[in-house]
Image 1 (cartoon, rainbow, N blue to C red):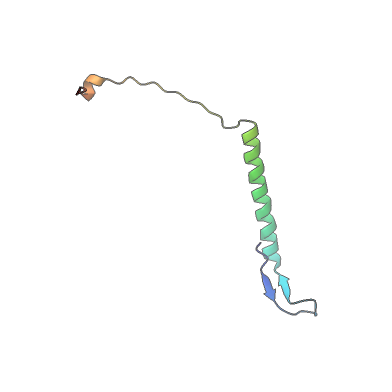
Image 2 (cartoon, rainbow, N blue to C red):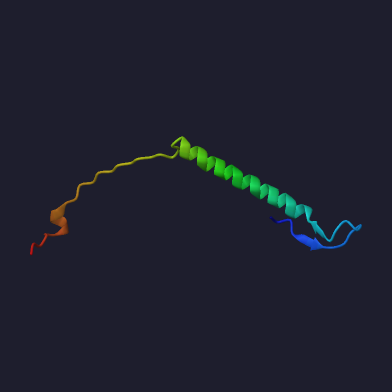
Length: 70
């Protein structure tokens, strides 16, 4: 992913070499994405964050105004 190819011919072993920092960043990013997918899947299957809330409030229609009928 981030191991960009650098066109060099070193020791006649080919003309492309990836950088170590790019490879480490790619591995870290893939692990982080995998962990995030695991968390979301486990939350989905165990109904995590399943909240239902209800609130009640009285509305004084006299203070709001009348309703016109046509």
